Length: 328
Image 1 (cartoon, rainbow, N blue to C red):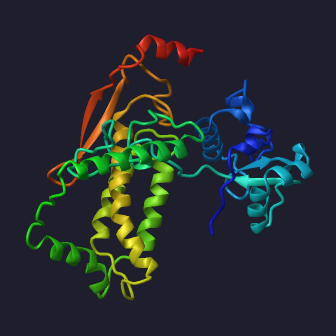
Image 2 (image 1 turned 90 degrees about the horizontal axis):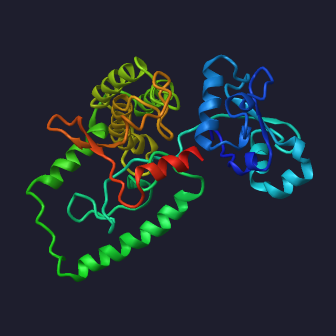
Image 3 (image 1 turned 180 degrees about the vertical axis):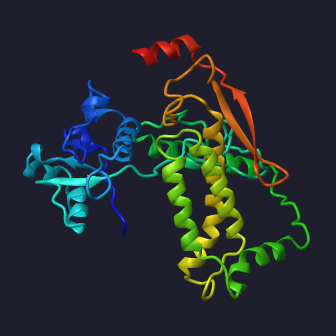
């Protein structure tokens, strides 16, 4: 186990964050609310402290819940306290190292009000769907999303099946055999790249060049490195069989991870402003005169994403009202 989750309720209750120099740095980034700032602001601030060389010895920053009192912490956050104990830290009485981590995608498949995607027969709900949360998801809304849109998707599928659309198109002859051959090649190779090493390289470049705080030329370099990893992934070798094989599972997952990384980096490079959870160090302000668009991606003929800017339609509230709410 590489780490454990410490939920934002800890900050809401009054826990404080400190950098490696012992400074309560959130007073500088969000002086009005400090640690009670939204999770994107806290994550971004922590990340900037870390890359500025003010990390604690473990590599992140530290959270301190001890001023709340040991009895309160143990009673209110027993699960978090237990998880910290597994790593030999005392959440109730001392400072614990923490770091931002990947958590949720605001993007995903474009769907209509019935959760129907553009691909025939595909219905999408939850984190796999895009546009539900805009540029930034509020805490707790992920579960709401899954419940509400999961129910909508289920009812839409039932209606679709009841409307006489049970006929399934015949699979192209040879398609199944082609898929089996493609997916089992890593097992058949006598030598090749290690899937674990490629995954680690992809994770590292996403953290350092496509992560919490983005800028050029990091994004361009990140995209070049993604393409290099993609090329190397074509030579992956898996030892052992297909059943209960973690290395094989990583090899299969890596193909999707590369696709998603490529889409995220390409979209981040296109949006030259800061909006929601997307933060550009070289374009640090939100620009409504420029950025009121969604980025739609499709797979091109060469397998790379083709991008389209689609204007945001203000169907339920006018732009002026949204901007007034933002200022308030």
